[in-house]
Amino acid sequence: MADNKRFKGKYVTADEAIATIKNGSRIFIGSGCGEPQHLIHTLANNHNLNDIMIFQVLAHTLADYLNSETFLQRFSVKLFFVPIKMQQAAFEGKVDYIPTYLSQLPHLFRNNQIVIDTVLIQISPPDAFGIASLGVSVDVTLEAVKNAKTVIAQINPRMPRTHGDGFLHIDEIDYLIPHEEELICIDHESVEEPIARRIAQYVKELVDDGSTLQVGYGHMPYALLRYFDNKNDLGIHTHMISDAFIPLIEDGIINNKRKNFMIGRAVATFCMGSRIAYDYIDNNIQFYFGTADWVNTPAIIGKNDNFISISSALEVDLTGQVCSDSVGKQFFSGTGDQANFIRGATLSKGGLSIIALPSTAKGGKVSRIVATLSAGAGVATLRADVNFVVTEFGIAQLKGKSISQRVIELCQIAHPDFRESLIEAAKEHHYIFTDQLPPRAEDLMFIEEYKSRIKLQNGKTMAVRPLLPSDEIAYRNFFYSLQKETIFLRFFHTVTIFSRKMAQAHWANMDYRKNISLIGTVQNKGNKEIIAIGTYAEKDDKWAEVAFVVREDFQHMGISAYIFKELEKIAAANGFEGFFASILPENRAMLNLCKKCFSDVQIKRTADETEIWMKFSPEISS
Image (cartoon, rainbow, N blue to C red; front, side, top):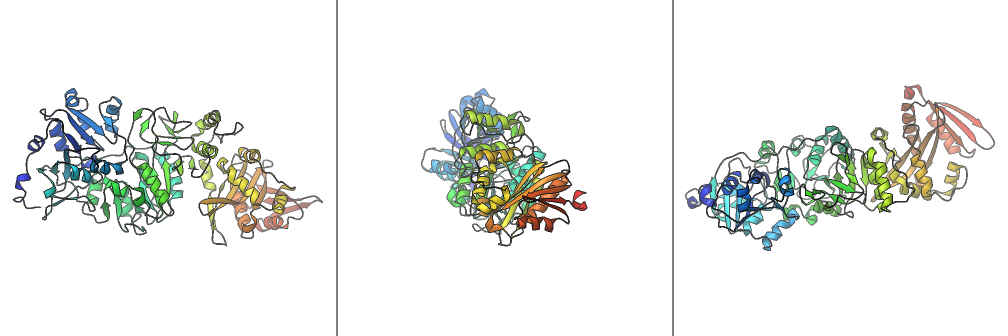
């Protein structure tokens, strides 16, 4: 503890400190779980104060006073973020919302665009050298302190002492008020676990071991962390630390070892959670709490290789515009720094960004994937910035895609009940062709079991999964990459045109049980290319007709045999007993493949074609 004799004149009661504030003052209050509750109550109950303007980012305690007419007559509340407790007050005009990036607030203070007369903050007890910590709320509070005329600080022994930029010397503070109270604790609202689990399954596909994560403010992103227990060596560079990170850190899943920037440190700007998180970060050198204009800046974020931003949204329209702060004209949160982290991910080597959200709201009555954003909705993230959008129905990849492609990608992950109406709305908006077919109105979660990966002889990894409507252009590109001879052996005649109509007809006929196509894809820089396709279609109750095509530069690597056996598993699970293939006599490669993959093969030859009947093995059929 600092020498009380030296700073004796600074120690006062809360009433004495608040009494120094003049009418007409502009006050900034420390935000989130770092707000000084005792000072706020004293401020609100001082009836000598009038015409006071209050600025705060994440406000909690002030919500207790917003139904008081006398309070509203004396105080004007300006918020940079609208938390749950303030949403109704914002809708009723009792508080004023200022849209801005959190990372830009320090600049607004420095440039006197927002002038601060007094700040009310909460700090940890100062050490023997007179240095205290802002603890859980460094963010913009440090800059507010530097630019205020008067600094009033509540010393709370329950405030953790955090490492990073949030240290203050007592000389920088005008009034010190010792008062112990529990910090505000945030219980993240429960989410529907089955939906969160499904979303997490898709998100995890995009998160490689060794990635550095940012997890955006919201219930869903933090719920996803519970399902990251099979990941390894993750790092953290985010705006907020919550309880959800702690189990992953304790289990060594988050260890920050493979970060190339701020190695070994979990970087954040504030903490909101419970005593579990507060005790864990207390004097813990693993954490670095920096100012928002440093932590949340794209150029700094982009220094992290393999950076992945995971954030949420209220709505996403069919062009990829993201709304995260309002439903129509009603504000539900704030601008935050979602766009900064997404742009930082773009600057990161190997980085990507994910918008994760449930497909519906209000008990399934409203789609969150919408034809157009609600009237009055704000665009938090521009369509040009959005990379991946994930719901419980799959992954939509929008980066570099046209509007028509985005429509199909997003309709594909919308709730099945809304897919047809979204396609019809897209036609009305002239986003897509008038003959565009909607994705199947069915929950295709079961096809996740059909996915697999294999290491190829050339060192590349091939991912195998069912063909989807969104693959239309990649599928056509695959066809046009094939040589004439390969096409002739597959189709029995020369095919020079593979039209959009043909590609659409292919996937439209698939039900993923009686009729399915598996594609093999490999990564080529930023693009996944289709290099193989295997298809079976129902011939009768027992037999399914099968066909394959592998791009010439990937032939003789065992790809056809691998996909063949994967198709066999799927067909057997769906009640088929064997495959049938009709090939040209000169297609020796296909004939040899069938003999290699199946022990029970019957061959019937004619002058024009060869029929092959392949019985599944008893182990597969059972």
